[in-house]
Length: 170
Image 1 (cartoon, rainbow, N blue to C red):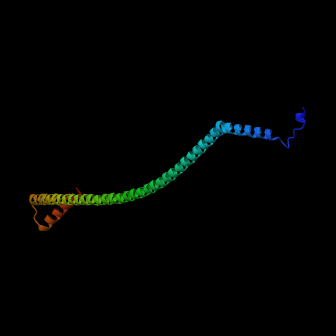
Image 2: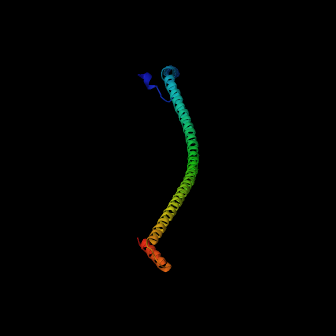
Protein backbone atom coordinates (compact mmCIF):
# COMPACT_ATOMS: atom_id res chain seq x y z
CA UNK A 1 0.00 0.00 0.00
CA UNK A 2 2.79 2.25 0.47
CA UNK A 3 3.29 1.97 -3.22
CA UNK A 4 -0.07 3.60 -3.91
CA UNK A 5 0.59 6.37 -1.46
CA UNK A 6 3.46 7.67 -3.48
CA UNK A 7 1.37 7.62 -6.74
CA UNK A 8 0.52 11.04 -8.19
CA UNK A 9 -1.61 11.67 -11.26
CA UNK A 10 0.12 14.89 -12.03
CA UNK A 11 3.53 13.26 -12.05
CA UNK A 12 3.19 9.79 -13.52
CA UNK A 13 5.97 7.23 -13.32
CA UNK A 14 7.99 6.60 -16.47
CA UNK A 15 6.95 2.93 -16.59
CA UNK A 16 3.28 3.83 -16.34
CA UNK A 17 3.73 6.45 -19.00
CA UNK A 18 5.46 3.93 -21.30
CA UNK A 19 2.75 1.29 -20.88
CA UNK A 20 -0.05 3.84 -21.26
CA UNK A 21 1.44 5.14 -24.49
CA UNK A 22 2.09 1.61 -25.76
CA UNK A 23 -1.47 0.49 -24.97
CA UNK A 24 -2.85 3.66 -26.58
CA UNK A 25 -0.79 3.10 -29.74
CA UNK A 26 -1.94 -0.55 -29.95
CA UNK A 27 -5.51 0.53 -29.37
CA UNK A 28 -5.14 3.31 -31.97
CA UNK A 29 -3.65 0.90 -34.50
CA UNK A 30 -6.32 -1.73 -33.84
CA UNK A 31 -9.14 0.80 -34.03
CA UNK A 32 -7.51 2.29 -37.13
CA UNK A 33 -7.46 -1.05 -38.85
CA UNK A 34 -10.81 -2.25 -37.65
CA UNK A 35 -12.90 0.93 -37.35
CA UNK A 36 -11.27 3.91 -39.06
CA UNK A 37 -10.78 2.21 -42.43
CA UNK A 38 -14.41 1.06 -42.70
CA UNK A 39 -15.59 4.47 -41.47
CA UNK A 40 -13.25 6.21 -43.94
CA UNK A 41 -14.39 3.89 -46.73
CA UNK A 42 -18.06 4.50 -45.83
CA UNK A 43 -17.40 8.27 -45.84
CA UNK A 44 -15.65 7.98 -49.24
CA UNK A 45 -18.54 5.88 -50.60
CA UNK A 46 -21.02 8.36 -49.23
CA UNK A 47 -19.07 11.27 -50.72
CA UNK A 48 -18.94 9.43 -54.05
CA UNK A 49 -22.70 8.69 -54.01
CA UNK A 50 -23.45 12.32 -53.10
CA UNK A 51 -21.18 13.51 -55.91
CA UNK A 52 -22.85 11.07 -58.33
CA UNK A 53 -26.27 12.30 -57.23
CA UNK A 54 -25.16 15.91 -57.73
CA UNK A 55 -23.77 15.04 -61.16
CA UNK A 56 -26.99 13.25 -62.11
CA UNK A 57 -29.04 16.20 -60.84
CA UNK A 58 -26.88 18.56 -62.89
CA UNK A 59 -27.30 16.35 -65.98
CA UNK A 60 -31.05 16.16 -65.36
CA UNK A 61 -31.18 19.94 -65.04
CA UNK A 62 -29.23 20.34 -68.30
CA UNK A 63 -31.56 17.88 -70.00
CA UNK A 64 -34.57 19.78 -68.67
CA UNK A 65 -33.10 23.01 -70.04
CA UNK A 66 -32.53 21.30 -73.39
CA UNK A 67 -36.07 19.94 -73.35
CA UNK A 68 -37.44 23.36 -72.44
CA UNK A 69 -35.46 24.93 -75.28
CA UNK A 70 -36.65 22.21 -77.64
CA UNK A 71 -40.24 22.70 -76.47
CA UNK A 72 -39.95 26.44 -77.03
CA UNK A 73 -38.52 25.84 -80.49
CA UNK A 74 -41.31 23.36 -81.30
CA UNK A 75 -43.92 25.74 -79.93
CA UNK A 76 -42.53 28.58 -82.04
CA UNK A 77 -42.47 26.29 -85.07
CA UNK A 78 -46.07 25.26 -84.40
CA UNK A 79 -47.09 28.92 -84.12
CA UNK A 80 -45.41 29.70 -87.43
CA UNK A 81 -47.04 26.66 -89.05
CA UNK A 82 -50.44 27.68 -87.66
CA UNK A 83 -49.93 31.17 -89.11
CA UNK A 84 -49.04 29.70 -92.50
CA UNK A 85 -52.05 27.37 -92.42
CA UNK A 86 -54.37 30.24 -91.48
CA UNK A 87 -52.93 32.40 -94.28
CA UNK A 88 -53.38 29.54 -96.76
CA UNK A 89 -56.93 28.96 -95.52
CA UNK A 90 -57.78 32.65 -95.96
CA UNK A 91 -56.24 32.64 -99.41
CA UNK A 92 -58.13 29.46 -100.33
CA UNK A 93 -61.35 30.94 -98.90
CA UNK A 94 -60.90 34.07 -101.04
CA UNK A 95 -60.12 31.96 -104.07
CA UNK A 96 -63.15 29.70 -103.57
CA UNK A 97 -65.44 32.68 -102.96
CA UNK A 98 -64.07 34.38 -106.08
CA UNK A 99 -64.55 31.25 -108.16
CA UNK A 100 -68.07 30.81 -106.78
CA UNK A 101 -68.91 34.42 -107.65
CA UNK A 102 -67.49 33.97 -111.13
CA UNK A 103 -69.44 30.72 -111.58
CA UNK A 104 -72.61 32.41 -110.27
CA UNK A 105 -72.13 35.25 -112.77
CA UNK A 106 -71.69 32.78 -115.59
CA UNK A 107 -74.79 30.83 -114.51
CA UNK A 108 -76.77 34.05 -114.11
CA UNK A 109 -75.70 35.19 -117.59
CA UNK A 110 -76.74 31.81 -119.00
CA UNK A 111 -80.11 32.00 -117.26
CA UNK A 112 -80.64 35.59 -118.46
CA UNK A 113 -79.64 34.64 -122.03
CA UNK A 114 -81.97 31.63 -121.91
CA UNK A 115 -84.79 33.79 -120.52
CA UNK A 116 -84.18 36.39 -123.23
CA UNK A 117 -84.26 33.67 -125.89
CA UNK A 118 -87.50 32.28 -124.43
CA UNK A 119 -89.00 35.78 -124.30
CA UNK A 120 -87.97 36.36 -127.90
CA UNK A 121 -89.46 32.99 -128.93
CA UNK A 122 -92.69 33.76 -127.03
CA UNK A 123 -92.76 37.22 -128.57
CA UNK A 124 -92.34 35.78 -132.06
CA UNK A 125 -94.99 33.15 -131.33
CA UNK A 126 -97.33 35.87 -130.04
CA UNK A 127 -96.70 37.94 -133.16
CA UNK A 128 -97.32 34.92 -135.37
CA UNK A 129 -100.51 34.15 -133.40
CA UNK A 130 -101.53 37.80 -133.64
CA UNK A 131 -100.90 37.78 -137.38
CA UNK A 132 -102.94 34.61 -137.72
CA UNK A 133 -105.80 36.10 -135.69
CA UNK A 134 -105.67 39.39 -137.57
CA UNK A 135 -105.63 37.47 -140.85
CA UNK A 136 -108.56 35.30 -139.77
CA UNK A 137 -110.43 38.39 -138.52
CA UNK A 138 -109.83 40.05 -141.85
CA UNK A 139 -111.14 36.98 -143.62
CA UNK A 140 -114.22 36.83 -141.38
CA UNK A 141 -114.89 40.54 -141.93
CA UNK A 142 -114.40 40.16 -145.66
CA UNK A 143 -116.66 37.15 -145.67
CA UNK A 144 -119.37 38.98 -143.74
CA UNK A 145 -119.04 42.01 -145.93
CA UNK A 146 -119.35 39.90 -149.02
CA UNK A 147 -122.31 38.02 -147.61
CA UNK A 148 -124.21 41.11 -147.00
CA UNK A 149 -124.98 42.76 -150.14
CA UNK A 150 -124.75 46.38 -149.27
CA UNK A 151 -125.65 49.11 -151.58
CA UNK A 152 -123.51 51.96 -150.27
CA UNK A 153 -119.87 52.19 -149.29
CA UNK A 154 -120.55 54.02 -146.01
CA UNK A 155 -122.80 51.24 -144.78
CA UNK A 156 -120.03 48.72 -145.58
CA UNK A 157 -117.50 50.71 -143.52
CA UNK A 158 -119.93 50.99 -140.60
CA UNK A 159 -120.66 47.32 -140.72
CA UNK A 160 -116.92 46.44 -140.83
CA UNK A 161 -116.24 48.70 -137.82
CA UNK A 162 -119.07 47.18 -135.82
CA UNK A 163 -117.80 43.67 -136.57
CA UNK A 164 -114.28 44.73 -135.57
CA UNK A 165 -115.56 46.14 -132.27
CA UNK A 166 -117.48 42.95 -131.55
CA UNK A 167 -114.41 40.80 -132.22
CA UNK A 168 -112.21 42.97 -129.94
CA UNK A 169 -114.71 42.53 -127.15
CA UNK A 170 -114.66 38.74 -127.58
